[in-house]
Image (cartoon, rainbow, N blue to C red; front, side):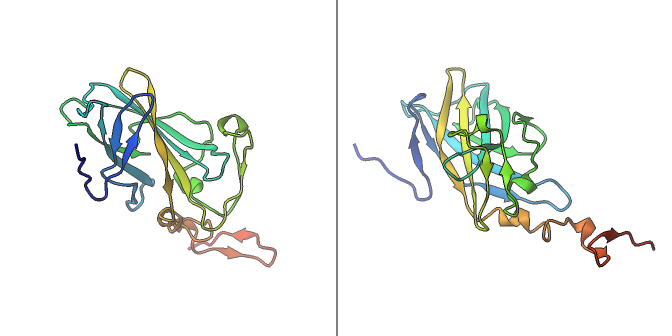
Length: 196
């Protein structure tokens, strides 16, 4: 029997859950003026029999990892979703305040996508126990998704977050936020406050 493939949809075989996940979209960055950066992720989960996953409590672990071989954990958020009557479709937003942060890095999304400085991360969260990541100017990040419908965790193959994070970096100028754009320093580089 021939399988019909719709453009812009990827299929991934999951060994543990033996399901297919169709990506209806890619990572979408939502930057709203004066709000924290967020990342939207949308998809559709089909079970191995081709029927959509429609469990009433599906947990998602959404992770941002370093792009190198170490794949160190930089951010992890746990979200629960009722997928009953969804036809297997879901839409999740990282950093929207509705999930539970699971990592201990304390890094904001702004700093996670900044390529100006090295990161010292817990070696235990890396695949090779090397906790240092020094990004190149064009380094992206890895996005890892795991889900559990009650039968155990299944991992979707990692996705690359490419140059799109530059939108988050654009919220700052050389690391300075909007409230610091007018900056006065003395000859030694020490900042001085301006009074009206």
